Length: 68
View 1 (tube, rainbow, N blue to C red):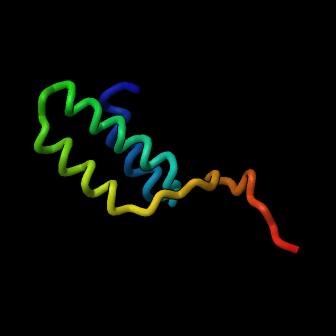
View 2: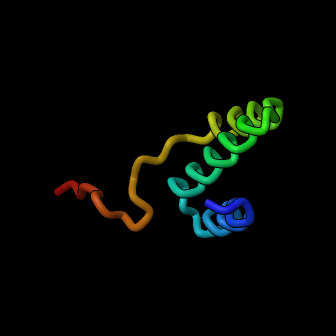
C-alpha cells in the first residue's frame, strides 16, 4: 500500500466503522514504522490496537450466522 494511502484509508475505514480494515491499516503502519526503526511510535500504536476488541466478522455481514 502506498504511504499516502495509509492515513486516508485509516480515516475512511474508521468513519465507515470497518474495524477489520481499520485494524489492517494500523498493522501496516506499525510494520512500516518498525522498518524505519521508529519503535516508540510502533509500540504505541500496537498498544492502542491491542486495546481494541478484535472483530472477526466481515464488514458486510458475510459469514454471519443467524440463530433460529
